[in-house]
Image 1 (cartoon, rainbow, N blue to C red):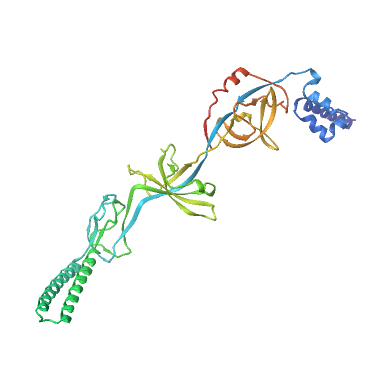
Image 2 (image 1 turned 90 degrees about the vertical axis):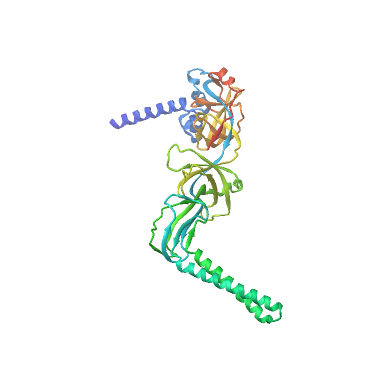
Length: 390
């Protein structure tokens, strides 16, 4: 007896559930008809459809909906990448030869001009060698001049004259060699720039492997980053870029341009290396900093709809478009989103109306009554055309 009561109660609940589903869930009747449930219950599909539209309680009339006007928007396609910056030029300063430091002509963090003296090594032996080479050159020059005068008088053979000229040329080369050896005892700036930390003192002995300091030209900064291969054909030197310091909220955007583009796409990452250039007049940027680099590309014009109008089903996204006071289900592909607008690709034109509220009871071809129809229509002529970021 108890079991029978449970069966009857379950049947009543099931019938009540089916009744509520048929009356308040759009498409329920067609679903039950496809599965054969309406046949088992003895309900005609047409009757179920009437019940679903409220026919059992009298006609409801057109469904009240709120609509929004479809506008146009141009996509602002962009690529964001992480880049590392480095100085326009950078050099690690070292000596060419070993020796004792006798002069340090720089300060840590100071600016030096091109060819300015950075450091001198003990060069006494080299100066002596230069002086000796000069004396030998003067002697060779006098001898060559004397033999030349004697040859004119026929007192010296041509062979002796050539030997004198060879000795003169050898003396000139020896002087050049001595002067070059002397120049190696002085370290000069290869270009204008800023000196880094200096850890060298007078009296210290240096070898060619010892680092004196790092010289950088930060008048401009180079930033290396990579872009996906899909935009390879759109990236070219001179294209503007924006860069923001990574990890700093509210950092100002720095503007620059693409300086160079690599000619090979990396097979593993499918990216292309790009080098940008940023101005650094105020000398705030340092090599090694990380930046977010943004490149913007021309976009295409698409239909823009209210985010509330976009619905989803097993077949994908769609909107309810109002045409001749009836709704049509229009499939769309979402291309971009922002806070108050969605750019879609589909059978929509500027000025079309799409339902934003009241979509629960809609079905294709159903008549609707637009709430605030006057206001909705009034927005048509002035529809804005914003630019949306991805």
